[in-house]
Length: 117
Image 1 (cartoon, rainbow, N blue to C red):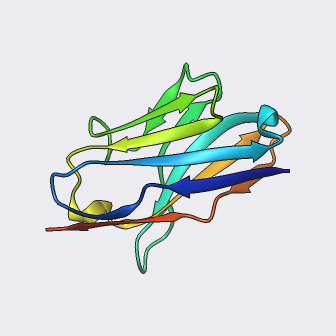
Image 2 (image 1 turned 90 degrees about the horizontal axis):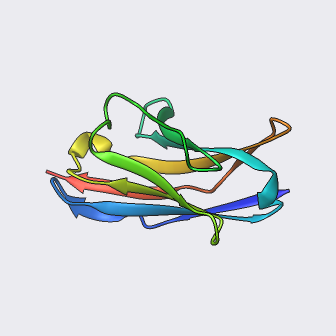
């Protein structure tokens, strides 16, 4: 089992920055990929970005490319989502998902990001 805990959300103004964290515990050594998703009220959950566990490959949704950066701290088993130049449309509940080598998925509980205009 893998446990994921997100943190770092909050209420900010447009143009501000936030850094979200996703801390993995349990069988974190089995993780192969980490992905950030978000879900706005009344909308489907959408892909934000991903990183492989070695931190060598990242991928981003077009809507956040150039503004968001995913990184990881190997020693802390933690993945970060640095969000700059936030927009009201970035508002939502942000989740991290861990994918193991065996292709099992684990989700965190989510952290709320609200961007006011």
